Length: 244
Image 1 (cartoon, rainbow, N blue to C red):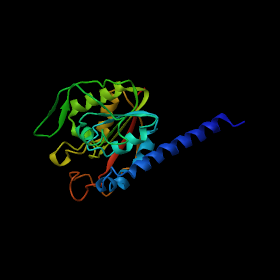
Image 2: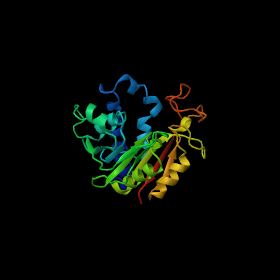
Image 3: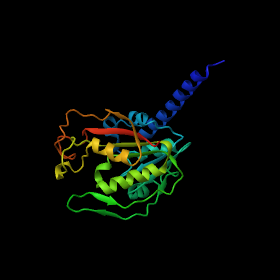
Image 4: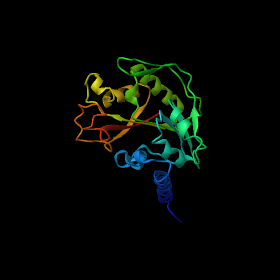
């Protein structure tokens, strides 16, 4: 008779192999263009999702999916056994992905909250809100945290906390700003990871781990992320939080 612990380990390995295979297949999809595929080596989606503890039977909210780089991987991987939700600034995935074959199960969460943008700092804000959804397993956001002012970031963190099950994971990645460097136009799309940790913990989360998957020593953290010397190769922090 097989040892229960050994059986569990084998089962976990098989489940991991399945979702990794699903992501690998999605990475080869024709729906992804050359601009998408060129970013694979830098963004390391399989390793990143493995770090966060992703599984294909989860319910997952992607905050601010943008043009859908991660949506094109997450939604197909979750289509059979899980559920993908897009939330906040979802116009492009609604227009370009939602009706495509393999993406029919995408659900977009409506948010009834006023947003605004400071024209001087070019940072956005959003009023307090909640996602109308059953508690989910995971909330992910990729390179979006820097786009918001303090009030906006706190309201997003609180909404993520509210949406998650107990034990659920909040995964956040963003471009690194050197610790305690003050805000400037050159640093607008970077954010201090220590500040992010403090803010996310203040919303009730527990820091589980960090990863150096997106550490880039050649980025000296002084240039705007679109500068030709660092674009596509910025240093990024990768943080994993849990709802108690």
